[in-house]
Image 1 (tube, chains in turn orange, red):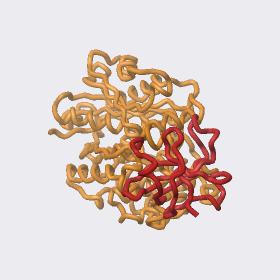
Image 2 (cartoon, one colour):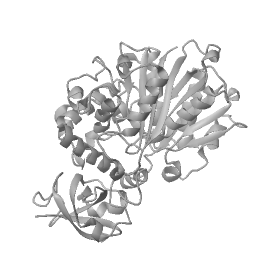
Image 3 (cartoon, rainbow over the protein chains, first blue to last red):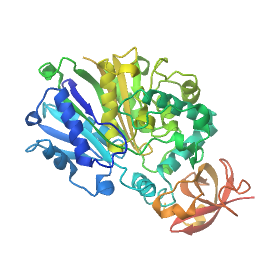
Amino acid sequence: MRPVAVAGMGKTAFGAFPDRDLRSLAVEAGQKALENGHASSSQVEAFYLGNFAGPSFVGQNHLAPFVASAMGITGVPATRFEAACASSGSAFFHAVSAVAAGLYDIVLVAGVEKMTSQPTPKVAEILAAAGDSCGEVRAGATFPALFAMIARRHMYQYGTTRAHLASVAVKNHQNGAKNPLAHMRKVITMEQALAGKLIAEPLTVYDCSLVSDGAAAVLIMPLERAAEFTDQPVRILAVAQTSDHVALDEKDDITTFRAVQTSAAKAYSMAGVTAADIQFAEVHDCFTIAEIIAIEDLGFVPKGEGGPYSLAGGTCINGERPVNASGGLKSKGHPVGATGVGQICDVVEQIRGQAGERQVKRNTLGLAQNLGGSGATSVITILGAA
Amino acid sequence: MNDLSAKDLRSGIIYTETVVYSAPEAYVNDVPYQLAIVELGSGRRVTGRIIAGNEAGAESERAHIGDRVQFAEFRDSIPYFRKQS
């Protein structure tokens, strides 16, 4: 396997954009990534697209060639990947694997979701289809409800509190307020976060990520060719994807995401690093409890200490190990299919030293953790300065 | 989960639970409702609903982690439980 690098990246703003359709968002991100990597569409040898529910949200199937052709990319493989909220993380994993194996050199990977054209109950229903439709979903589980049950159990087993959860939301909004592309650039207080409207006990509206439209893309290629395209290549030290049960009631311990642990172990081994070496991370905070569990499962803190560590400021931009300096899914927004590649763009920006007010101090080794559903898919990417 | 009979279910212990206030389209008329994962005697877990006397939020009827619940009935093949007094 040969080393692979990110040579270009592009993101749209995340938000509610009534005048934008799915294709225009994906094309904008894709073209930005090509421009950023100084490549033309005719050089692209394969197109990988992460998208969770375009058919349900906007009634469009066959999305990868639909998007690729609008960028002038035809005559090459163009394929859509679906893995719930890890759709574009999975697309990235398969694209990097193909380049590493020598199948292609120049590959464009994008993620996109257009969610805000549907009313909230319909959005909840479409998202819930990433759960077990024969069991939990039929019983009335939404994703907030599944993560609420995870939070309750985590509170019961480890003493995690509402304040621990709220501290994640407050920190991510603080960071997102500094991100010009974030959906909700608004600072919130601890009091607000604690007094939010209940969605599924104990989670309030401030514990939940946002329903957003948006897209992100990266241009990848063998490391040895990256210098032809950019003077700022970022090396992909590892990318690993693993799976677990879809239904929450089939997991033996819901306070941990086994797939995050297994994919992280693979990624650390592939990159030749340990959890302690990771300087900063973008993690999948679809709900505040998910960030707390992520930092535990990634080995940043011992099991059960994610809440106290977050409340103490360990994950702030100026903390010991910055997590979600971008604002995370909570403040930046969570256009489901765009999230995985969006996180990779955020890590690339940090390593290139282009994160502006959000820039972390130690920026040579970063990690992105993308979670699908309530943990049935996990993709871990480790990026480093080339 | 559909392979479970009333006999398999009988009773169990709440492994985790939530009360849902924001529902998917099909259940908007049910809110608030209590959803739970119940651990059965066999160790197997099932996702179902907890029936409340009045409404799901009423504290006297709320089932918490560790509480024993009894199977009440199937509705649309989903098991409904009631807190054991």
